[in-house]
Image 1 (cartoon, rainbow, N blue to C red):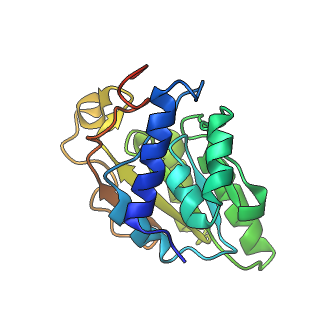
Image 2: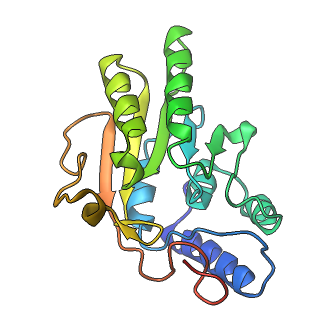
Length: 202
């Protein structure tokens, strides 16, 4: 069963408190504000599916079934930037766009071998405007790979506004009609892009 919105928020608040209490000696990137959207996406994610994401990945881990106690222990251990769980088919990386070609490779392998499942790859709005993203999405569509790109638009890349950076009023995939892409906006208003607002934030 999927965790509820309240359970996701409760976990994140606990992580924020731990970070501000200096129990986490590594960066944390908190979500808050996209719970409804990400739960909706995960209604279609199956146990055999793969989930690849960036440094903001704790919601994906929880919704894929990683026990909250195990996840929190790994975050407290400084692994928040690269939460990976082979037994749950989850891979995340702090390298911007780094998981995209890996996700395409996993989808190619699934298709070639007729294996069950598909790949769900999560990326931010700035990453979605990189050449890497455009190539991976175009290749996946043209090769009809079992993959779905979820673009989460909070309007930021660290402290930079994505639309101002590229002088765009509308992002490339904002109104993109494709079975391969889900795009949604959310407002990152409770916590900064990194940190929890008390110790280190940027």
